Length: 456
Image 1 (tube, helix red, strand yellow):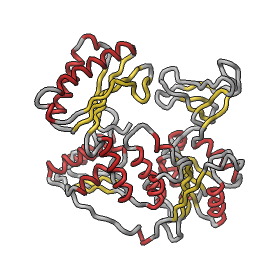
Image 2 (cartoon, rainbow, N blue to C red):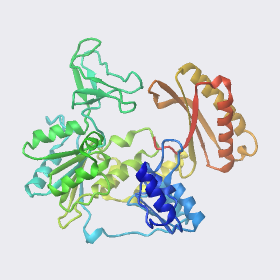
Image 3 (cartoon, one colour):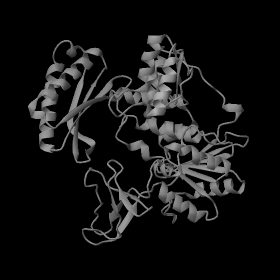
Image 4 (spheres, helix red, strand yellow):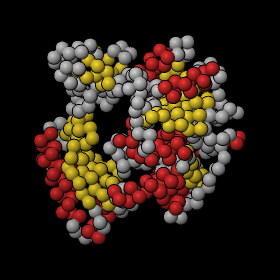
């Protein structure tokens, strides 16, 4: 806190002319603000999922207008909303057509994993990727492997009765972590020992799915004499920070770096000539309208970590759906074709940039009363939407329905979704309805919040 206060004073008095920071740095009290640069502007981390639920990009736009400053949004894969705005003439586009020092783009290969089991391979590393890894190691170069799931396995399942251990506080299954042989909830932090036998019927438990811990074990089995560095939320906290791990990877020339989103962007290691994307389909089918955009961006970004030095690079995308257009376009690094395809889907579904999605979440410990309160909130909002001036804009109200994760830390969550344009009258209406909801005695013990175009 003391360091933050010192930095705040330096900025406010003008002694610090340049401010570099994460999402909250957009609020820095800079004197004579001249330019705001948002790197990787498409990244979902710029959207706060805690109150206040702001998007740093929107705050930056507001501040730039207020201070007559220049706003620069940088990205190899701009968000669909930003690129749509550029296409509409809101701001100019400047293209960088060459990589740094003129390095060529890596060769991108798509590896079909559908026949791996029939071929007798039960692991995550496919035959094609294993062959490329061997070639990279023989040439004394480095490789980065990307898997966006930590832990050992997604869950344990009983082979006899099919039971899957669940978190007692949340409506999710427990993730298996081989370190300490524990089952953990990634929402509330609950953990318990993992047992070899089912607590209900005594049947044998089997691990399903793969996380970074499991892939690390597989790599050590395939390449027993090769050092592997795993970088995820579990290892970074124990090693003193991600900077220390990346320094080790560079200085000690560790052959393989395996990690989650931490290894997907911003890394520049000249000796990395191979990038492997494991389970590339994982983010394609999540319950969010940005699923295709997130997948395209992640793959494009992580593929760009290869071949940044004198040697040419190669990237391998492992997938069960090699013909999927998003993966095909990501392999070709063809953002414009992806944008055209995604924009058509957004228009059909009335998603941003054509409409905005207001998610109203009601949470409480008692589910029945929560559902009744959600219905009352929906009815009140629907009645107001029929009146002037709100009825002038097309709007669609959906729900209430359970949230994607319906219970977190004993608290149930139900959601309403309002699809319409984000206008000042709509914001005033939602603020009024939310205030009336909190005043109603029937809603004691319940909380309600609104998020716009949520990333969750």
